[in-house]
Amino acid sequence: MDNQLFDYSPIVEREPLHWPGGARVAFYLGLNVEHYQVDRPSTSIFADTRTLSPDPLNYGWRDYGPRVGIWRLIDSLDRHGLRASVMLNSDAAAHYPQIIEAGLERDWVWAAHGRNNSILQADMAESEERAYLTEVIGTIERATGRRPRGWLGPALTETFRTPELLAELGLRYVLDWANDDQPYRLRVPGMLSVPYSIEINDVQMFVGKSLSGPDFLQIVKDQLDQLYEESADSGRVMSLVLHPFVINQPFRHRYLDRALAHIANHPGVWLTTSDEIADHYARTTAPAAGAATGAERG
Image (tube, rainbow, N blue to C red; front, side):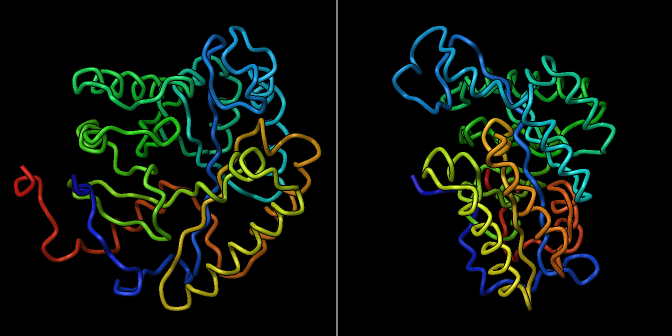
């Protein structure tokens, strides 16, 4: 089947996008706060043991994030005056209340990120998915005092119904479709796609490609500088996607801190959140002529 969720829109044919204060690039830091089940395989650094139950090697590597890595990251965010846009598993909200408390103190944004990152969302029946989404979003709302407005599926997984079900629950954007440098409207009334990067992403760079800390620093600088160059007439979005069990290992963290300093001190950058990007885009741009409505799609 052809894709019916969004239209093809070449970036060179769009109306100019303008960010607050004349900024050229809207930057947000996508912080993944995740929980992993101890008896299921998931993201791994050593594949030979990933199917064992338990798997101390890979589970322990992941568990470094909430125990140690995130606190190192928080120090850097505070130093550079950056708020996090948190991609939050609802199980993490229950298991790591100290992280929730730290985020509330810093006015972080909370985007729902499924129940945990051991169970993916694909292939759910509609009734099962509706119950799942309702439970995840409700758990995060109770833990943070705020109803999430954005969604990132575990491992960016969805069903064909996910955006529509999320809209029914009051959410306003998804981050799963990593195909643009600007937000855009989905063919679901009231729903946006906000850019999220699977390349400027520590898991892909360090686990997938075995890059070094200096490689990471140069890539982040190059990403921002290229987007800034292209944004003279129309704004762009840069996301930096981080997992504390990866980027906040001691030997890598210092390169992240330098990258954050480069971003925070770069001219023409709006240091913001995924929520604020979605809000600004929805408020200041108009739907494309002829865009489908709910009735037309039904």
